[in-house]
Image (cartoon, rainbow, N blue to C red; front, side):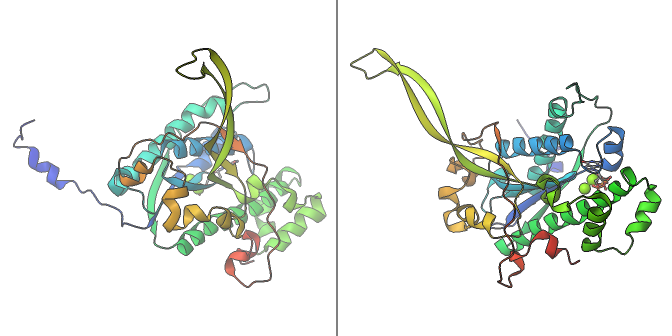
Length: 330
Ligand code: DGT
Ligand code: MG
Ligand code: MG
């Protein structure tokens, strides 16, 4: 199309590209979810249906944008970690962030009826418009990235322990919200643990991992067996039925402790830049070369892995060896 005299306005657009060779984290957060959760009667302090819906939307994002190597979610937020060398949208930050926010929000609405069901299995009506804000943050080193996700997981722990104690005092202890708040002023983690156990017989460490640790999404190769029917060879057209086992890259929803070494050791190939393209989640290497196409490996299936409890902290004095509970400074 020929340039019009209006064409010059295009020059006002900026296409800020994110610094190369840095981990891109897109963090999204539900806008006004305090009201949104109340309006839709989310269970307090945690509504497993709502968390599973967040997780399902995040799984869909990873399948849609396979350069995401991991994601971490808690409450109404999700952090998506893109491969350090991604060339998605030529690393245009606005485009990456807005695409994630938009895709996540739409999926959240689309999948609402499957997840937000009542005791009879009937979908709860969606009576407000869920929407999310987003930001891109860059981390230059793996240490920074690990500290970032540790920070979010520690935040999850602090909030969840507080909320669990607060709502137990209100719902089981009969305190008003004001009284419960006053009761918790100046308390540390050990005090809340003690209160839950001695007054309500609740062992906080036995609360579901999904609530205590949040959700960690990552890729794993899962063997899938398919049945195929076809001729044995060109010479012999007789159809035969064969079973073929393939390794399919699948998004796993886990609830592991990101302050422990285990997760990072298990995924060293993804997080070590030298081999990330050989063994990372994208079989389609083109994704990393800026073609921006959807990798063929993606699958809609979520495999819920029975989470392993965090191993006790080892004697090494490393910050990372500590669990989220220990790292919250209480
Ligand atoms: P914002 O992000 O500044 O627009 O404001 P909010 O209201 O979204 O605040 P935020 O993001 O700091 O806190 C998340 C809110 O969402 C918080 O009030 C608790 C609520 N929420 C998230 N998940 C659940 C849940 O499973 N159950 C209940 N009852 N509330 C939840
Ligand atoms: Mg929010
Ligand atoms: Mg939030």
